[in-house]
Image 1 (tube, rainbow, N blue to C red):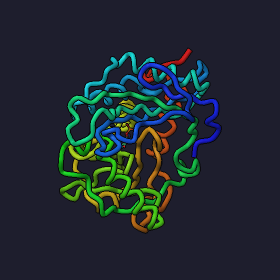
Image 2 (image 1 turned 180 degrees about the vertical axis):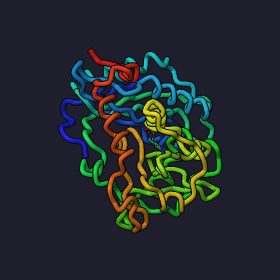
Image 3 (image 1 turned 90 degrees about the vertical axis):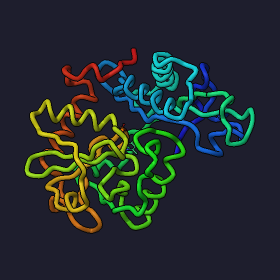
Image 4 (image 1 turned 30 degrees about the horizontal axis):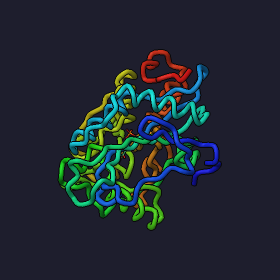
Length: 306
Ligand code: PMP
């Protein structure tokens, strides 16, 4: 739940409004039909002030998703990059989560959305940890979901609002069954992703992750692949079946929210005897150095605010 929203602001269509006064019209097309796109972005505390992780990559993905559903965003990528920096500053945040969202107006209602206004808003808030901090070491439990990723190619690989329905249902199903997260399968029954995370496994010293045919090409996923290669670890993108996850030496999720979080239990079976694996730990440590600005080699991934 959000706390202390009294002095917080949301950027909307080029200016700031008070968080507590911010609203969307009840007839917004997006509210009725899910026609919109969003991003999840993170800013970290560094010795040189707050820095946003891979800001331009997130903004580019927002524009790519919008174009997939024929929404033309009335701002440029650099304008929205700047707006995200300004939103952090305006809210005096040294670290936090940013949520840009693009949604349609309420000038008319019906499925036809051709002439509706396109609105952009950016909210930001403190968000030190999505998972229990202990989870970074102990790992989390997951459950194979009965909810599959949709077959329509628009329904995976893009952060399109309406498509998140099955992800929410998958997460709720997992939580109701005592697990921390869901493992969603693709239409062919291969491992796809978590409800909001990509997945990797380690077997015999090599890393594997599903291809992006049926999952989001997460920015943390792309970062981990790059980091692994730089550490001379082998990473292969391929179809992964349930048994490969079950018999993995290590498994972990990646995502803006969870960063790198070990998976220690799958449907009541322990992975790596229920403890974090060495490669997972190595990647977590490198990722931490990068996001805190201590690794100069990856500094181009950080956008510093003042
Ligand atoms: N898959 C899904 C379905 C997601 O919503 C997310 C979160 N954006 C991810 C994977 C991880 O992507 P990223 O690393 O870009 O946060």
